[in-house]
Image 1 (tube, one colour):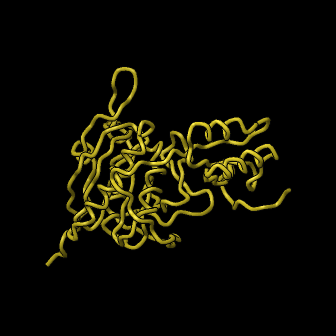
Image 2: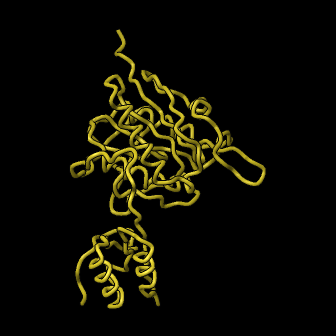
Image 3: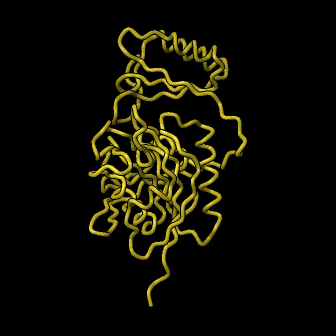
Length: 279
């Protein structure tokens, strides 16, 4: 007797994988069932589709990401579900993946995928990515939220889009992928480190304004000060090197912190830690 089929729920959110030519460019407009119709379903898997929204991911809002987060948790409330695949635009896929992973406390996987070429393209990558994502969602456990793209399995944390148009679009600059997919098999090389998940925010939560400020040659703290003036509750300072900035930035950050703004320091360098070195 065959083992019971793995039940995978596909949440469709749009992106290039759901995009068709609109006369002047491509835009997401295909429902999830049409996206699913392009891909083969791995043996032993049944799928069902939720059409959550249909947007090109540069237009995605944090409110929509919150809706996605709650939808994922609602789907996983059904013990009969074995995993989730989210089809998503590549431009902000890394942001949604990270948000989902921050709040993910279930051993069942949530796998994000998409495409670099539009729906129906003769050499499209969407069908293969979707097949690999379904297979991964039905196979792995206790790995958190994953990004499956071009035959590679990436952890949500640390993964970013590193290629604008190439098929191998995602990578973690700090390390290798979690695993790979090939010949109908998912091979996991290592398990990602994941801290304890955060509580799920309310569906109607008022999300804080968080601005990002980039440091560069001749940069001044104008945009730090502007963000504070605009009511930002948080600022991400994207500094140089290991997290270096000018004394003027240091003073602006100190002033922001005194006003109750949380300032998080990172670096524009793709890999390596932020650390104190210079004065």
